[in-house]
Image 1 (cartoon, rainbow, N blue to C red):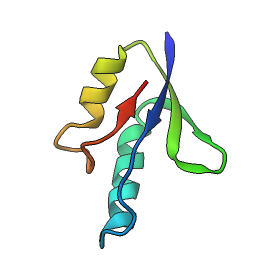
Image 2 (cartoon, helix red, strand yellow):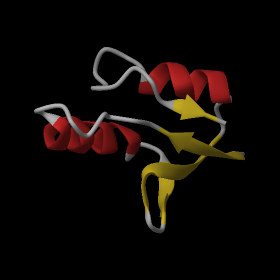
Image 3 (cartoon, helix red, strand yellow):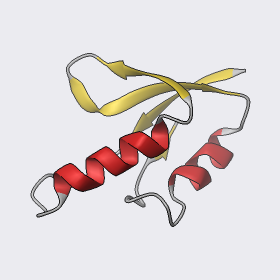
Length: 71
């Protein structure tokens, strides 16, 4: 099992930011994760998948964002 940092930018200026953020967090909650204190757009996740697999999953059509970075 590996631990990854996931970052994203939902561009807070857009009109549906809150809805997109909630949908992405719900999508991300499928992984064992924890928030980075004080940084809204960073999560640490634990998974047996690779960074590429997680990144692809987070960018699926069900996800409201296409720019998540998994490191």
